[in-house]
Image 1: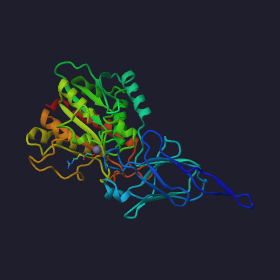
Image 2: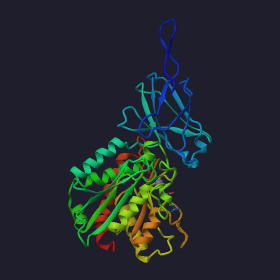
Image 3: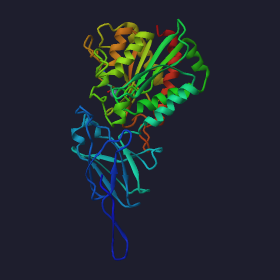
Image 4: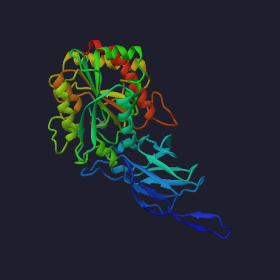
Length: 393
Ligand code: GEM
Ligand code: ZN
């Protein structure tokens, strides 16, 4: 961490030299290479623990001269996990950790560069609007005390952080069991913003929601990978495991987070599954499904089409033109949650992807894709689930 100090010229005007750049906080991630020149701050992103993956960054800059140009360079961007994703990407920034906005950024084939003349002496930068552990704790409290959910079980991460499984509904026989899990990949902070949208709407009983909850219970895991997020990881848990590659062989030692989720699914059953993620490269909201599964059914195919048609009809913040390549029949990687759960329970099973960049069908030049838009998408997904609950089986 470089300390800031000031030199004074003869007319006592202040010439700024080094800045203070820090990341010793929840989801912090940066390595300071050289912060001695405010117009050329050289930084690097730190890889996940026990893993080569990196892309998530989150750091604070103190000691800036208001109104003076400051330039930052993430010098190892070209070596990141999704290095093609930096083109068209703009860094997220905030002066108060509450209101986030985008800073025009340029990828030069090696580094991601961005500059600003700050309105305040301190600022935070991040790959996406962070969802903090403190906000997570408040969300769980909201879910239990205002949204009428119950705490069904609590898993533990590698480092012992709680992984609450919440249920909205009484578990009565015959009710559909709709599971929504989020942030297996810890750097995909939009996922828990999405879960806040779910829990926010559960506090606003409306006819659509009542129809859904009359026939279905919601099983919610708002955060699958708390260790990874706390440590500023992009992709893995504290053991360096990609949780979305552990759904066939999870262990209590290496991937206890998935081990817990699968155990609870076996206990309660699954009639619909949504695994909430973020995507680095594609500037749209989309879903991936389990069409490559060996046991893929016509009903699953029809339900996927129905869900996609309904959601794209409801909001411009969802589309089906762009997304991942379709899986080849029988060639699916069964270690992915969506595929594993779809095969095991023969239910509608989807991966939902929100962009780190923006939705190019409805761009917001100030925020790009954001926590607030993730929350609104969740509200729209609940509307679609209410429309589909009677046909899920
Ligand atoms: C993705 S899901 C990958 C799905 N790929 C295809 N082609 N269906 C992952 O785990 O890599 C989810 C994510 O990381 O956001
Ligand atoms: Zn992901």
